[in-house]
Length: 116
Image (cartoon, rainbow, N blue to C red; front, side, top):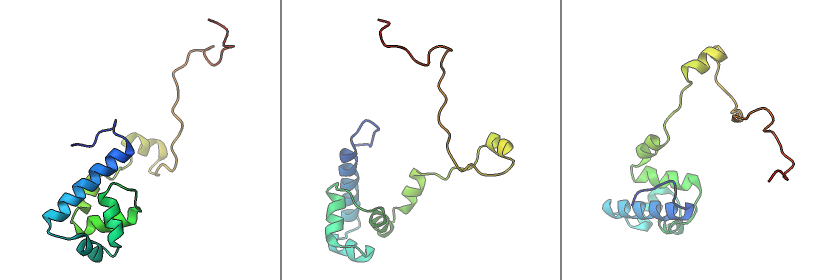
């Protein structure tokens, strides 16, 4: 099963938990061994594998023990400044995101609601 945007958060967590469980078994680690090496409780490992929500630091610890941090790096790439932003900002980095502008025609801003 692959993770897709239409999936619910719960379904994605369950899929990630199943993948981590398979990887743990592949590495021949028990839940207790993984927990000990990661410095977390066995119950936390059980929760991750069951698709329950956990703290990000605990997930990072599990990924580190399972040699999967590089996959996390690939999933969330470093974003550098775009060349046009560098020109506009004169070498400075953007600090904020601006609201998206809508394409509206003059007079489309509001209506009374009784036009139908």
